[in-house]
Amino acid sequence: MINLPAIFIANGTAIMLLIILLLSSHKNTRYGLLDDKIFYAMVACTILQCFIESAAFYIDGKILPGYHTFGVILNAILYIANICFAFMWTIYADFKVFSDRKRLRRIYPFVGIPAFLISVGSIVNLFTPVFFHITENNIYQRTGLYIIPYIFTYLYLAYGVVLIYCYRNKVKKYLFLPAIIFMVPILLGSLLQFFFYGLSLVWIGVAVALVSLYVNVQNEASCIDVLSGLYNRQYLNHYLYSESKRSNSKKMLAGILLDVDHFKHINDEFGHLVGDDAIASAGDILRNSVSEDGLATRFAGDEFVVVKLIEDEQEVIDTLQRIEENTKKFNEDAEKDYQLQFSMGYSIYDRKSDSIDTFLSRMDGAMYAEKRKKRM
Image 1 (cartoon, helix red, strand yellow):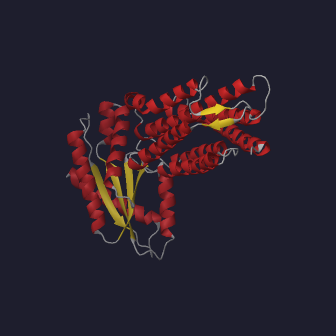
Image 2: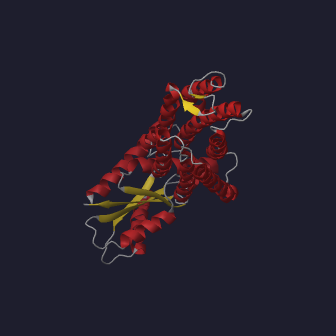
Image 3: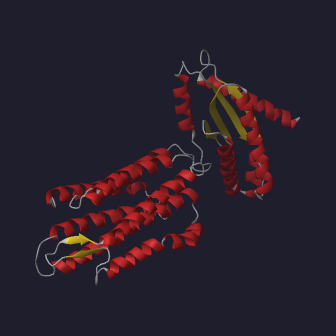
C-alpha cells in the first residue's frame, strides 16, 4: 500500500535539507576541488531522485494515457541514479584518502564496470523487463534480477567505508567516524524500503547522511592543519585543557616539542613551496611515529607538539626513537631536495602543580637545550 502523503513529506523534507545544505555551504565552497565537485554531484543526484521517486509513486496504479511509458522511464532513471550515487561515494572516499586523480583514472574504470552494466540493464529495461516491469494496470513490480542493483549499491557503499578504515591513518584519523555516520541512515532507510515497497525512506536517509557527512567533515577539518595534515594548535589547546581537569587519571600526560632544524635554510634555498612540502613531510613522519593513543599537532611554524598518555617515562623515549628512525628512513628513501632533522624536548605533566603554560615551557626549554648542543 502506497502512502502518498508520507512519501511526499519524506522526500520533500529531504529536498529541503539538501537545499539548506547547498545554501549554507555556498560561501565555503572550494571551487575546483574534485572532492567538493563529487560531494555536490551526490547532493544534486539525491535531489533529482527525490523528485523522480515521488512522481513514480504518484502515477503508480493510475491508468491514464502515457502513464505506463512515463512509469518505465522514471523507474529506469531511479535505478541508474541509485547506482551512480553509490559509485560516486566510492570515488569521493578514494579521493579523500589518496587525493590522486591518476589513481582514479587508473582504477575506477574497472571499479565502475558493475555500475555501467546496471545502467545498461536499466536502459534495456525501457524495452523489456530486466530489473522491474510495469503491469497493464500500471503497477510497478520487481523482477527476480532486481536484487543485483541492490547488492552492488551496498558493495559500493561498503567499499568506501572499508577503504577509509584501512587507510584511516593516511586520512589523518578524522574521516572514519563521519563515514560511519554517513552509512547508518542510508542503510536503515534503504533496508526498510527494500523489504516494504511503498515506503519512501531511502532518500530522506541519504539526505540526513549527506548533511551529517558535511557537518562532521567541516567540524573535524576546522581542527586540522592544512599543510601538515596534523591537528592544529586550537585542538591541542582543547585537548590539554580537558586533560588538565582529569585529576583522577591513572596515566601520566607526556608531551614532546619538536622543531625542524634549519627550516629557514630550506625556505631560502629552495623556496616556500618546498618549505611547505617539508612541513607536510614532517607531518607524515610524526603521524607514522605516534601510536593510536597519541596526538600529533602542528604548534606554530616549524614547531610541532606530540602529547600522549603514558604509564612510564620509557614510552616517551620509545616515541622519540621512533621519530628519529622514521626521520632517518625518510631522508634515505624520499629523494627530496632537503633533509629533515628535529630538535626535541619532552616533559611530563604534573597534575597537582603544573599549569598548561609551565608544561609547554618545560618542553620548550628541553628542546632548545638540545638545539644548543647541536650547535656546539
